[in-house]
Length: 320
Image 1 (cartoon, rainbow, N blue to C red):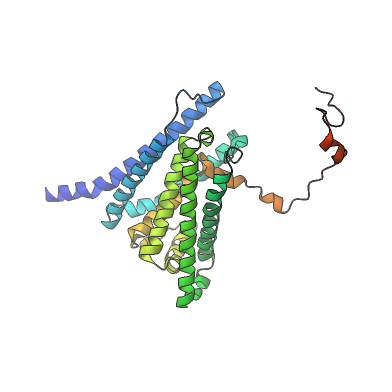
Image 2 (cartoon, rainbow, N blue to C red):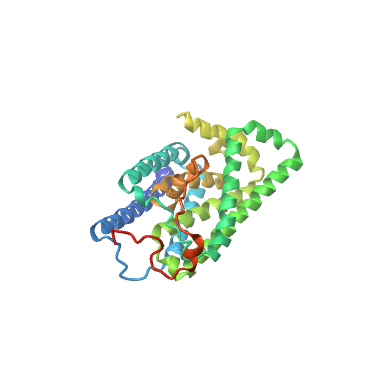
């Protein structure tokens, strides 16, 4: 009987976590596909009643907190195959969802790949939230990328305590900048009736995921310390083992739970990219950097156009 009870407890927690994740993914995909079906049939999604997005965000944050707690308990007690599930299977699952979902969205709804910008609806508050958020994320992303590509150089830099402290404090400041910007963006969206018009439930999932990712990263930087060094020494070999299709989770499994949550949420962000506004960074106009200048021919007098009261400037179009 004792063996049966231990076996039941050993399997119950990872099964509960897996079922919870499956339910969340199922409900999310159901909302997405149902919305797409309505748009296809009716042309627009009907707005029969106003949606309380603040309530939806709070519910999602509560669900996220519950999942984080379950994962914390499971990771700290090393329950079942939870480490293998999160760090060996889930990364490949997330990448597969990202690739297949992106290809489908490009082929089926190519002209809908956008961030659904609301800048023309409200610009001032957007500026004060967007700037610290994007600059914070940009610096942190390239910091992680450098530690992944050049781990030896990062470890050599950190060999001097002063340089290590400068790097850690700088990263923490940019993390706070990203969090501050995110809070301001959420506040702007919730308080602007015009911005709420172009808001959907997936935006709340984006906010929830970003909050988990940024807060866990700040927690790692404050409580675990010297993340730049152990990232280069532990996470870089782990990530490279994933790319080599031979995941080595030995070191990751032994790391503190907060770091593991940070890793899991990063792969979760990759998985939801095709279904959210995250998709827009894949279509950023990078080709503007090397394409030729656009040629604009101006055949009218600038002075006469500025002072003219005519409805049509120049020659009236023939097709109207």
